[in-house]
Amino acid sequence: MGPRQSARSDTPVYDPNCPFCPGNEAHTPAESCRIPEDSDADWRVRVVGNKYPALVDEVATLPGEGLPLQEAEPAIGKHEVIIEAREHDRVFTGLSDAEVAEVMLAYRCSFSASAADERIKHVVIFRNQGPMANASIEHPHSQLAGLAFVPNVLAVRLERSHIYAAENGRALLTDMVQGELAAESRIIEATERFVTFVPFAPTFDCEIWVAPRGLPPRFDAQDDDTLGELGVALRRAVSAMEQAFNRPDYNCILQTPPLIDGAETALPWYFQIIPRRFLAAGFEMGVGVHILVTTPEEAAQRVREALH
Image 1 (tube, rainbow, N blue to C red):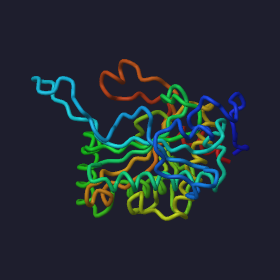
Image 2 (image 1 turned 60 degrees about the vertical axis):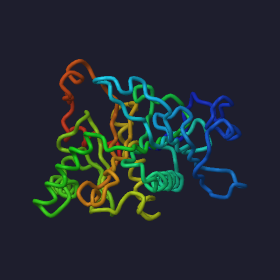
Image 3 (image 1 turned 180 degrees about the horizontal axis):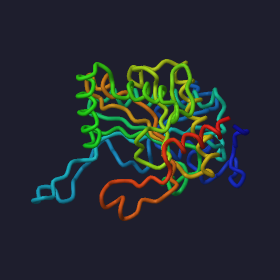
Image 4 (image 1 turned 30 degrees about the vertical axis):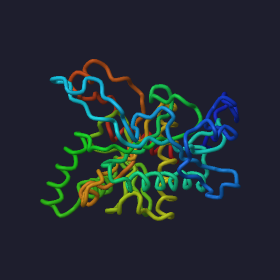
């Protein structure tokens, strides 16, 4: 793989109007985590509340409350931003091993704080890169959403995973990873703890998973070394994906089980990288089935070749 792009050539190092740039800390909601922790030192990574949250601590009123067929629930939860670097023009693929490890440590910190809130039933961390991925601020950042409910799609996935685990004695994702390692054709890279691959039946064209090789503890129980290796694997996967497919916008999602006892043994966490190469059209939106124009084997080969 060629040298990584460390910064955007057409973006300034500092933007005085960007709330995530150093010196503008007063323009963000309260800070919940920073690296380093020393408040007198320059921060390298910050976790702050989202200024325009989709989920909030309290909701006063609900439109349409009490009307027939218009039942609603308050959007209670947590919505945070993980600011990944001080420089406005940095890119995720340009972060060093130490820097990307600190981003993963911030993920763990934010995840742990959300999971400690008894109202929160599910936590998702995601990164939107570029306009097609619905990114609104250039400064490198990720987001965390802590939901007070388990989304229906996740509940179905968990139920099926429990059935598989009961019948086979192993987590479905664990067997998927072992199957991909045996097949080899969709593997992009494997390390001591993680496997990067294109799944046999991807939902999105050329999507990539970075998954643990065995059954891991909950995400917020990962040790520093594991998170460091994870960060490097994730950065390498995104960088190779960008080179293989002409730097598309993308979404990167930490898929985790709901915060229910025993869920992580049936549905382990993993990262999903979704290149936004094509917009969903009427067919996809009408029937919920995505058309793939690239076979998983071809996608894996192209990313694998870009990696080396």
